[in-house]
Length: 420
Image 1 (tube, rainbow, N blue to C red):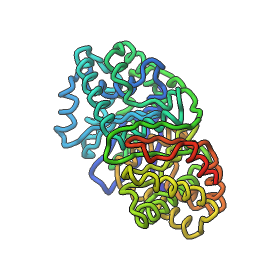
Image 2 (image 1 turned 90 degrees about the vertical axis):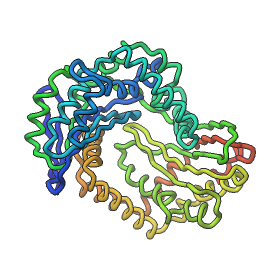
Image 3 (image 1 turned 180 degrees about the vertical axis):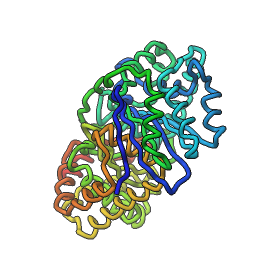
Image 4 (image 1 turned 120 degrees about the vertical axis):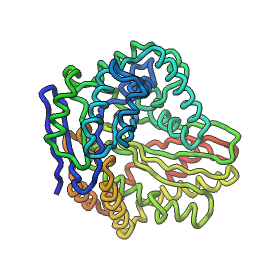
């Protein structure tokens, strides 16, 4: 039975706790329902730049003091920016909850955006962009999404471009925070050895400079599909073949997760067995289901020797094309079990539970208990997976590839293979 409690403060800020009395630690954080799809058109990367700058000082704490206060009690801090969410969190011993929330509240409400610090951090992020560009199995995801959602905010990189990061005015960061870091679009969570009333009391005292209301709505996503190819002199060809999936609020979201698990979600999956174990075409092959609020992506990633691309792509297309007609009850049962086990294993981590709680409240407006999620997974049957497979794989495909392209089939040829 879930012990999660949620309280909404007078300013609209939600405070949620997930007690784990058997542990000695707590993860607490601030979760925002905004990310790169909420950026101004001309300022791609500002959401991520803001995240970096919040660690660089407030009127009462410089960057060193922010990190020292947490590390002095043995804790650690982190943050991440996605296309729809941004999070700042810290894991500490249970007695240091107040210290962690005090630092986090100061960071998200009172960032200085000091010009000298901003200029230094611009260079750090430009280095991060360069590192991503030099990592093909990382940057290919950005190219894939840009091809799925061409010309749309949802398809743009969270890192932005070096040109924008080097020149975006400080005021754009200030304005982004003012528009988006609002109590109606954020959640304070704490998971671990905590008492709900204590977290509420701290939040009421610490989060008093947030203003009112909610963040601006992000642009809607509209999947289109297509192809991206970049010929590079690499040891491997990295490629993603994808389709339109379902949004996180869709009743089919768990069905598509089962589908992804069957196709490429582990060593017993169809792709792993056929592509790696039987044919030795890849070291890494996997499928994934990425759901946003209003749309989703189903993708298959593989990295292979360029000389074997001509063999790999037909095999992958064949596995995709025949999946709906050859599904078995055994595969569906195994995939359901894998998903439920993964969910339960994740509950052993205070950080996972804090993040899951914050994300659920932002996306669904409420907490989904483990029992409820398990019941939804259990309700997925063979007919539902077959239906979703037929629907997903009938959408316009997206192909993204980086590496030596000589033996990679044309996009038109791949579409023909998928059509059977």
